[in-house]
Length: 364
Image 1: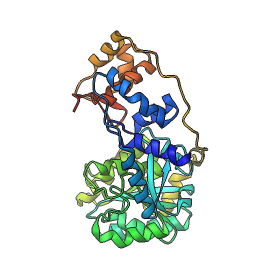
Image 2: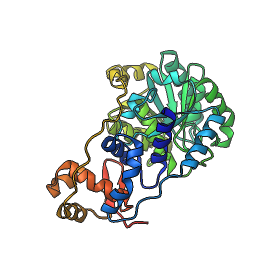
Image 3: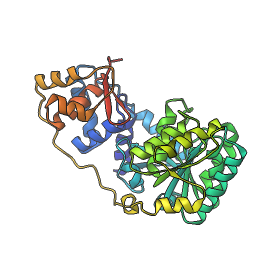
Image 4: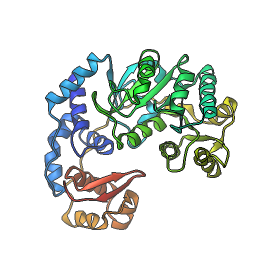
């Protein structure tokens, strides 16, 4: 029964127009992935579009078989051992593919990210900092990228490190980290959201970054240029209510500008492991140790009145707008607005953006 349930959940997660937010809403409304899959055509019709193409069960079965052959396994949202801290974020991945030591997910986690073209001094600092944090019982989480990520993983490999990758669990990126990726899979924990065989694309890296930020009690940034992926991770950590820490650098080095900006904006200045430990001590660790709870079935809203749907849709446009603002401006009940947005997204007419924003788009 568990295998059938997981197959249905993975099929729902892999279907078109169904992102993490929509996935969670569908399960909350219908209780099971099977029931949600059955309801999608009617919901899309109400949203004014065609039903999205659902993932082929045979494709999902083949994916699950491939994961098993690779020595991996799945962990599903709100099922053990899915990390409770990650489950708290609005865009929590419905399923993760993992390989390695799952017990690491039960320990205090701290993320460390930074520049790919990091200086030698910054790499040494990241490696030594990760090693010291590991000795204090923390598990270092990073993205297996060149530069700071690589240094952090190497520094923490003996005590336990978690690598979140942008592609499939069997894809080595960057190629020079193949041996390190294999070492982490054997002695640490490797995590992927994408199916096996998926080559990492540009759009996959922000998705990976939210997992890194969502796993950690806090995120440490060691060298980062302005508008870099590391700053995106730091911003996401801040949005998730996690501690943001940054290592200061010379104002003459462009690679330090991002960290210095973070500190100016309120991030905790970090110079050694003791600073990190001090910053994380006030963090309420119990938030990451709450027992997982299953999706609770909720009655789906009754048929939305045409006037309500028209009111909400007219407030939408190509510019992303917060859902809370839609509720306020439309004077329509929150549950009804969420139902309308769900229908529009399944119809391919809605895009979701960071920060709980949505925009209207034409169906593909």
